[in-house]
Length: 343
Ligand SMILES: Cc1ncc(COP(=O)(O)O)c(C=O)c1O
Image 1 (cartoon, protein in one colour):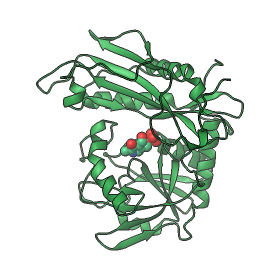
Image 2: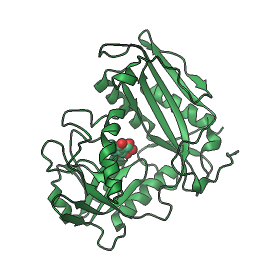
Image 3: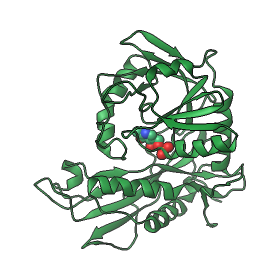
């Protein structure tokens, strides 16, 4: 197995170029052949709908190198399904699951030397991207699309070990409207989150915390990650129309059941934060980022969750189990992992 000459434990989260990306064009009502490219650039019409009218969707998933040297990709089909729901919401061409899976496997295989070694904590991040490419002046859906996938190695999330972080409730800016695009992975949601995220950082917090944008009563998301709280051996996560259905959260709910916990998906009033024994933000980036406290600076209330400042026992167990499945150290009971054929 040849690996790229990179300092795997210090590669961070910037864009690191790899050898290839894969592309497929949708024209005349159908998807064409898969193309392999070694260019980082996309030639684009200046009136493309992705540039003006937000016909843009993306996904994020990862490939992991196991102790056995094999490459495992986590829940490709779930990411394909989420991109399909984003396509439906934005009237973009839908990428069939088989095409999504084939292109994901292909781009990872072609760049296998960039899948970091087991034990480095680093992984290969996979970024599928769907763009409306044909020219429009009026606000209409495009009739041509580009679906592409690139990859980039990403460093270990917890360099100093699994640790807790402080969050701050931001009421000033919403990332999504109640019946808007919050449940879909479109770029505009991230543009809408930049001010809240920057403000949280300026105030010294690790991330912003969103309440529902209609009533500001219930918990929505923890920055670009889903929220869960734990009490009485129960994993509780918000039911909301405007949060992104996180594949990590969905997996953690199953792992929680497997570990003998109960699971509740329901509205969570902000005051309930006082009653959680543990809480976390979850997503592909960190799997679980345990929450130390959530400050509501407008009311002056501080919800301290990790009283000793450390991740709790359930967070640790859930994290160990899910990352164990991803790296191939624990049994993949639910068929979540695709093992790549030997290169
Ligand atoms: C807004 C938002 N919520 C939640 C998540 C977590 O989703 P997943 O677990 O599928 O990475 C992400 C990251 O993709 C996100 O951007």
